[in-house]
Image (cartoon, rainbow, N blue to C red; front, side):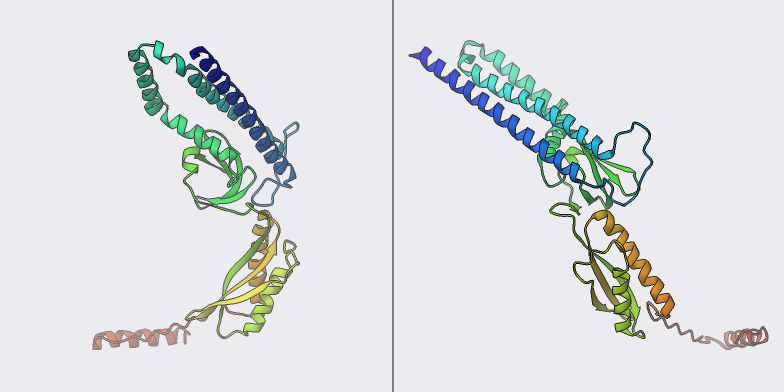
Length: 312
């Protein structure tokens, strides 16, 4: 009866182990394929629309990113199977632990805990974080993000670190364990549409309706503006010396959003200069106050010298 129960236990654990392995294989393959398909659909891999000469024989950035995903998921698959086999081996060996000396079991547990808890802690933390980031949809290779006040594209997510290719083509390298605790702003999480807004100021002396018209024209004249919806204009605040205004328009990618914002600012500046529109009204009044008769005499002498020199 005892032997029969042992066989039933070992058979059940083996079947469960095989089922877990098949499920893990299917889940990892599905996750890898979805990320590769998404990368293939990307038109560019930059946070700012630009181009870089490619050497002969050099593979494209998207192809390189797909290759990195394949390598990363290959490592994740090996690590996953390793831990599954460890847990499966422990489960299968449970009925036989009674035949082993208690001191030996305690020693093995103590040594394993010490090694994993101290010597390998940073490595294990990074590996676990890398696996979590690789399987997570919150941040993906090819996403345009702002992280640590830096704007760029996620170039690679490895088991040890995440690489952000910044707008100026520098690389920001963040350890995986730290990456899990950082807040980020994503421009491509759900879709690629972005409502770009530009803030500017205009003096109370100006015709506000004319300002509004020029700001909207600055949006509409940009080739990066998507004309599915008209631009919007708001007066956001009434400051001491000027209106605080916003103008906004739609575009369909993070790279075009960068250029649209630049076109709007340039268009507003050029139109304001041509029309003589002031951004703010500054009035400076300087009235000297004489503290003594000697100081008044100096001011009078200075005033005469200015008139003689032709300065009113």
